[in-house]
Length: 212
Image (cartoon, rainbow, N blue to C red; front, side):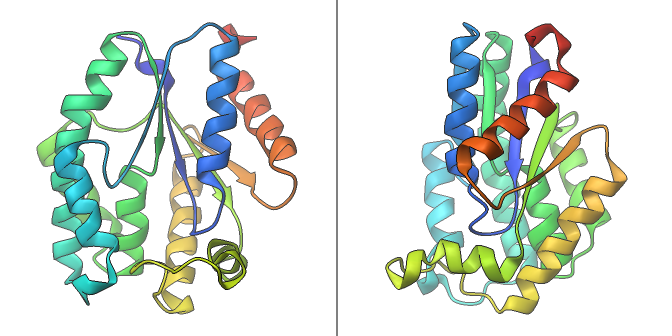
């Protein structure tokens, strides 16, 4: 199975994940590799329904455990029915958010604890971690301004959380990256998107020398 190229993108709100995923997809296409781009929460029809519950402000204040279990439910569907089949078929998988989002948002942001989130996933998903995780870094306050698009975009339920929550998420991401330097690459998400993409590609070429 070509599990070497299961690459996830993480970061605070407004870090530019979608843009960077598209640019990286172009890089892999130029290398002649078939690429699947997907996202979480979502990636499947049931997952998209769960996504609406999680991001819609009409859902109100969900319990931290409810968020975690909803994320785990959609991830079971996504990993088993979309991600793993694509990897077995030899495709590159680029995923906008994955397991580390649960640790950052529910583990650190909501206070459930990183180990509790990890244990829940290990029990149901087994060997579930990506090969490489690109952590796009931007200060939460700046990211939220970017996500708001100058006031033209309505923020979703998670984006509307207080800045203190997003700062906990940001700190959580950094703690994970420090604990697993072999899996994470940290990239400054401020600046020209193409220059940022070049930094990501350079880091990937260092990890996957066969792509040079």
